[in-house]
Length: 160
Length: 148
Image 1: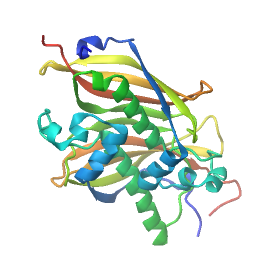
Image 2 (image 1 turned 90 degrees about the horizontal axis):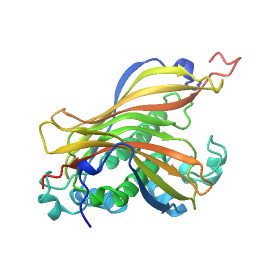
Image 3 (image 1 turned 90 degrees about the vertical axis):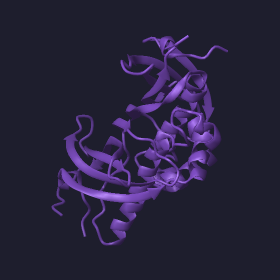
Image 4 (image 1 turned 30 degrees about the horizontal axis):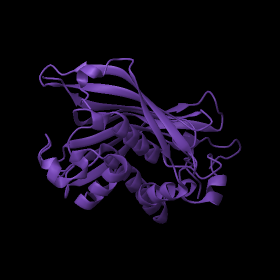
């Protein structure tokens, strides 16, 4: 079976990446290390803030997207899907934290390929853009961003 | 110390956010929990990747930028949460043992017309000890206005 190269990628294909329920313990543990604002850190102190209770750091919501993406790729490959020749990412754009994420909430994460471009600086890689989202149980948008990743170009002579 | 407000966040003001020592254990802990790609977990796998050596997850670098902005600015301010992050650029790998330095420059300060707060966009620039910029994280915390 051949791999998926940059040339094979088409925009579209929105898919559910996974679901995740945020617990109070995890929200607090992340906040202690990386985002020690009262409304992320301390359930009691959080009650007296404008959020009226504990909420997850936006960077925690983002890190969970990565966690679910990796699990999703493993499941796909285990199920016989072709492996995308993706490498690292140069970054992202336009991340929005639209609604608070509270303990016990379950978010459903989605990804969709939106565009791809060639790279002037390298002939062996291309760039692929994705629209990524998380929605709450009511289907409301909670979190979104535009992802970017480098994907290898098909080597000359490979017609896979 | 006097609490910082929206009015203190003038465009062009630069906050020194100190330094952050990134240990191998922290890189591995973050990767195990959130980003278990081989180049963040395993030295040999990293050598075969684009990154060449074990490196921190970009999401970890963003979390570190958040911590440094919190310690350098947000916890000294009338903090009201965050609206988002305009962009992140992962420019160079962050390696075990790196001591990162960060400066946060106010790029935009947008006043809310309906509420006593504003949206402040900071460009957080992180550098390693060789003075190479490793990342840019542009994020927009919400800061209360000085009603006094």
